[in-house]
Length: 280
Ligand SMILES: NC(=O)c1ccc[n+]([C@@H]2O[C@H](COP(=O)([O-])OP(=O)(O)OC[C@H]3O[C@@H](n4cnc5c(N)ncnc54)[C@H](OP(=O)(O)O)[C@@H]3O)[C@@H](O)[C@H]2O)c1
Image (cartoon, rainbow, N blue to C red; front, side):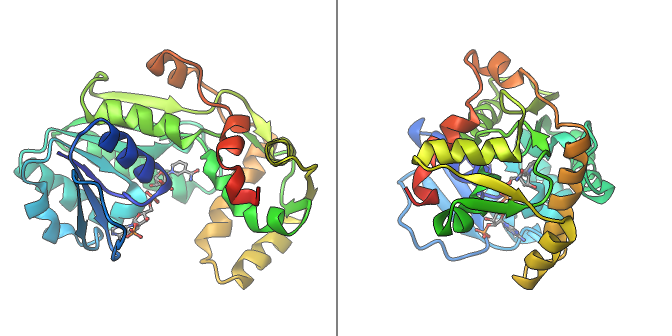
């Protein structure tokens, strides 16, 4: 049995699909009422992981836990103690490249660093996956692309190597199953560095339209996001890292290819896989 925190996140959903395909029983943690019928070997448990005491019973018989720091928040320390108590063997942490390659406000990287410290000292076998920007972050552009041919945003020249969620999930599943060496830190990125103009152009190619990126002042973008009701943290996280990635692109590693024995999936391929989300 494998227990997934953040089970409804970008990574969690894909990990869940891969585990189901492999016939491995899954416990998916959510706060909500997941009404969708689940495959036979998926059990859904509901509760708030920020106060995780309730989850102790669900940890019995679990071999490995996927940790999403966003989902576990301040409850991570207690969750790990409960996991040790219930005989869980290993933990796989979804961390971020910013721990080793600083970008954006230090407070966000510090949260990932704190989660790494807790997991690596927990007494469980552990794997830390330091993840680059998700290709799926580009879904935030979908409303603009459905409405027209121009994506407006800050820092056109900010560049990173976006990673396909399938690559993250494939590595995570191996780590959860204990088929990668334990006590390892992997920095996972996409295969190539792309700036925002290039990402928008590749989405256009995937949906058969000519799209362009128009740069706006960062403060205008921040005010727009706050006016949409987004919490302060969202523009702070985004604009801080973009500002730094304009000066120095995010890292590109060959770790996905090394681990999986095939090239990392491209952003162009991700855009084709997700063309429907952009109105195609
Ligand atoms: N996006 C990026 O570029 C990036 C880059 C590096 C690292 N990361 C990190 O990678 C991890 C995975 O990201 P992700 O986008 O796949 O999704 P995620 O943030 O792990 O998952 C979001 C899910 O967490 C659950 N959640 C939130 N608060 C919770 C709580 N109090 N109790 C229980 N569940 C809670 C929610 O599920 P329900 O709504 O079903 O409750 C939500 O669907 C995150 O920690 C993120 O910070 C992201």
